[in-house]
Length: 367
Image (cartoon, rainbow, N blue to C red; front, side):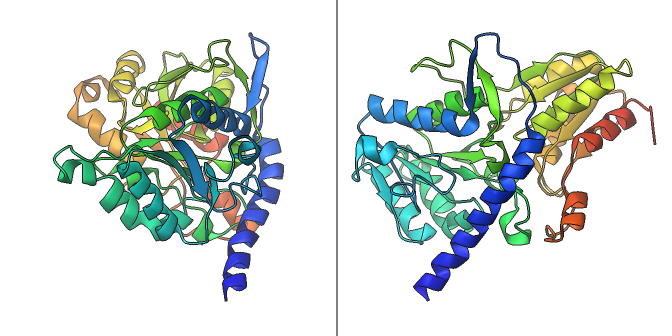
């Protein structure tokens, strides 16, 4: 039974890794670097953990295959050799168990990084994350903080069907006591993961496995050991005046590609990389709406009660609504369990063309 259980976990991981190589190659685009420095997302995450483990001996990492196997996606490669088995800990296949161990160690003053092979498996530990990590600081009257990072791949990959293709940004984003981060570029990953590790609160750090092998430029500042990015602050990746496109994770790539295509038709799209789901930087979104008077949200998750829905609600409840000249357009995944068949899977996930069509609808350029 144990061997069968282990094999059932490994097969999706192997399949995702194989699929990610082909899909990631199609996803990658040339990001020019003025500094001359580049890093893959995988390397940036690894560098962030190594730097923080060197800085603070209370930081350690645990999870399935993080040590001897160097991580299912090689994000923890080399850390066991550098820090030893006490700080890079392989766990049994029991998310509820090792998440509880990690949270208990955070209560005791350590700073654990708890890796899930995929956030789909973290559903086994959601009671620990939501009821223990997120609430104990409040329920203890501020006596017992929980400085922990839960990290791993989130959202759809390729060819792994309904049970391994969900986005949990909205799930965790609804929980008081959690901070939720969804990085896109290598700079995002390094600066935000280091900030998450230093944060006194529990942080859910949602990566995307299709981005692990994508190379991004790194500024001189980002190469520093002290590089941090503030949690709760979005970034304007591309300025524009005609329509605002707000996205997170892999959808930032599609939004920038859509902006390139729209520019060929004289449409100047402003692209905002959310970076943080909770807290949500509604100020940056509203500032952009005041300029463009149009809003498109782009995410890979389900449409109902999603990140885009929350953005719409907050825009309506704040000053941004008064500046809208068209209804908000939402780009999301399809409202169905993710199919395994490739032809149906391709119809399930949003892409660059989905964002282009939504932007044109917001501008009344198409039906």
